[in-house]
Image (cartoon, rainbow, N blue to C red):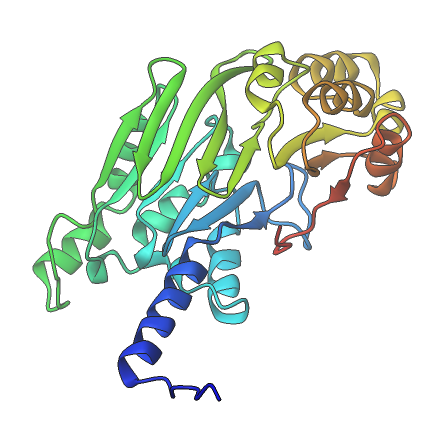
Length: 303
């Protein structure tokens, strides 16, 4: 007769540790903002959080995304999104709907930070950061020279890396980020990002038109998060706006072509420009030409 040996406290402790490690190793993707420059009470500006191995990495910081991060921290069991815990942010380009909460994140409770914020993005990011220092000059001075308990006087500063070329820009904690140039009208450079962890590959398009460099970098991704403009909404615009959007954004018909070539496990539609048409037209137009899995993203959706 085989006698079962009860688990010792050591084996219980080991099991708990392994369970925690496994949970931390899972890669979570949370949409912090799915909006556009068009004001929308239900959608923050562009922003995606990728959480892996106990760290949150933010991609774009449009208006309202820091509050969405706090919501996720408090309601979605995502303590990594406590603003003072966030260490790395990556900006696709410097349009306002992708950057307005960059100074918000840098300024939020910086005097309680243990680690400096690191920011990666296109040329001009250092100048933008210097503008944040100027904007908050009085607040920074009052805190540094007043009675606020400061852990480290340099924590208000952001360590900036301006991306000079395509390729790997970050590789740490089993988390790799590759930048690749995309075509977004007259904004140069503008980037997309390919994120790789041991269990997931995520590609974020940034703002772009149909782009061969994106197609090359997005092939066989588990998740492709891509901006889009409704063909129905676009077709009702005047010629000037049609021309502008056609050079800056991806029509649903073109996004379906991209998806058919890259074959992602899941295509996530975000930054949906739809104007007079219902936002759902972006979804119905894409799935009419592409039969893979597609999701129309809302703020705080998780994949």
